[in-house]
Amino acid sequence: MNKYVIEKLNQNNIEQYARVNALAWLQSYKGIINDEFLKLINTEEEIQKTITNLKNNLHDNSKRFLLKIDNQYVGVLKQNIKNIQIMAS
Image (cartoon, rainbow, N blue to C red):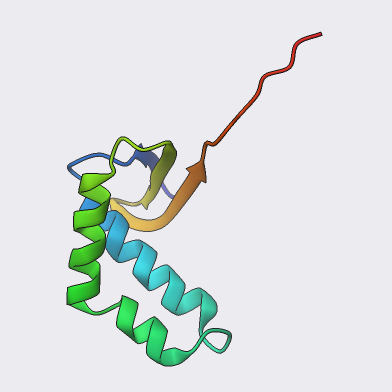
């Protein structure tokens, strides 16, 4: 069985998050979304913009995680938390 770890996004893994996210889009949406757009978001310039944006918004209302299998980052997850109301009976 492969060993996996789920890490919360932090200053130390922002670059990996940006790179895995861009690659995931390329692999998941090829043939659905324009190839030029998918290639664009995988350029070093765009990845660096994403890294900067993530650093500037690290403490926003979203929760972001990375999946690491056998010491390699392979997946990302973003969960937005907005206007959550807890209702009790």
